[in-house]
Image (cartoon, rainbow, N blue to C red; front, side):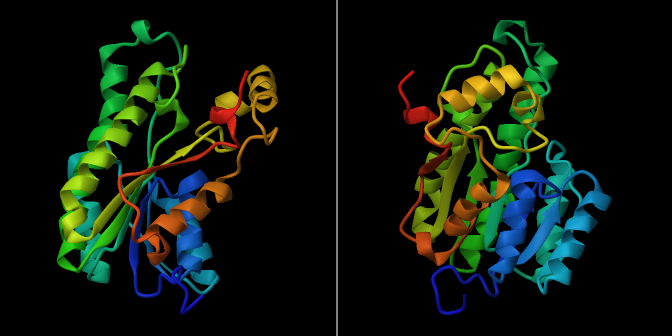
Length: 257
């Protein structure tokens, strides 16, 4: 890996929501590529399991539990990363919530605020703390895991889609603001991926059948298939890319129905 633009040796990365799913797959791949990785989610024991696996494979991982909906914990995540590793080069904003499934106009204020707080405001907090540190060291990369839910309407996860569309706008604005400081900000918009977060969708046989029938690849995704794009955006292979969204959905958003 060394000597290629995908070499992350010496880089430090925070991956939120990295105890499982896309976050875990991304953290493991970044570590495999040489990065020192901070594993973070709400539950410390789940993070420790992931970190132990990375260390056992010869990587470098450090656990910092964090509930991204709490500003003091977000601040501690970045501060503790800097204290432990002395720098920060990559931020992967992966953690998200979706506590409501149903018609958009029936959502409670509490549920809507929770979705927007965790999926949008927390990313602003994280970037506000991490991006200046990256700029001070000559640059860095922010990767926001959004969703094709931000590109399409939905009769059951409309508020979640609104939050993910907001992440696209956040990405574009931060890219413009911080590009002159060599900090890149990009989004990834996965389709339906086999994660615990999306379990209610892929375990529903009717939903799964309809989705795969209208997806050119005729299947849903796996977490490692998103991790590769995270690694690309984190690495020097993508140094001329910022403010963009990579859609990884098996082709579902391109297919005619």
